[in-house]
Amino acid sequence: KDIEYIYSEYYNKEEITRFSSSLGKFVGYTEYGLKQANHWNSDPSELARRKATKETVCKHNIDID
Image (cartoon, rainbow, N blue to C red):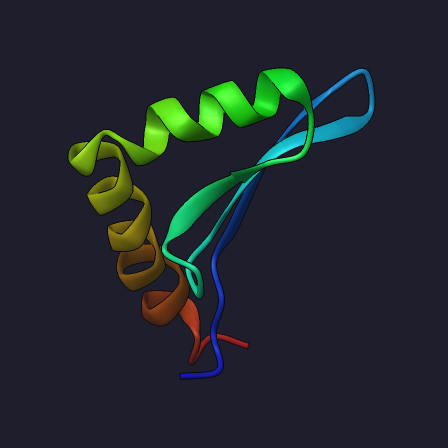
């Protein structure tokens, strides 16, 4: 429950988009990032892929640390 997977994209050291597993969707922070987030949020396979990453990477490795 306490694990959150975050994937961020940056351009020129500025965060433009972020996927948060707690929200279950992408959020845009710039004009371009908003367009990208809308595009990715409309693709169910992209959202499923990001949600699955939490299960395969985060939860799989939690006992290591």
